[in-house]
Amino acid sequence: MDNAYEESLVEIRKSIGCGTITNRGRNRPHHKDRHRLSVSNHVEVALLLRITMPFLTVKKRDATAMIAYIDGRHWRAISKNR
Image 1 (spheres, rainbow, N blue to C red):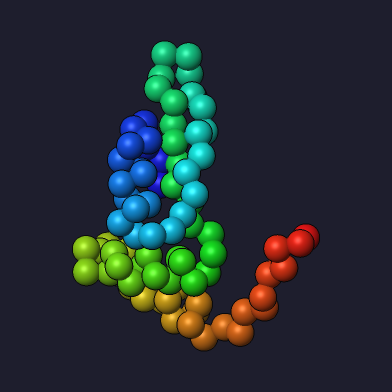
Image 2: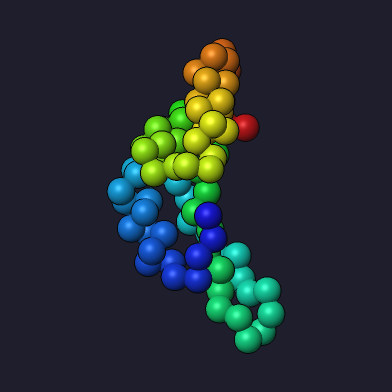
């Protein structure tokens, strides 16, 4: 999720309890910096989808399918010493 206002993403991150915020820079010199909230850990993605599910309409079926996919997989532990 990209936003020109980093503060908005910080508040979203606080409320969902996960994610990383990065500065993506500007598309053009007269644009504002873009900030991105990324959630990439499969457990956190499933959590985020479950939190947002009541608010989804168009993408609800896709979110349900992704949760089923994540829950149905056997995930390997990722070593932090890579």
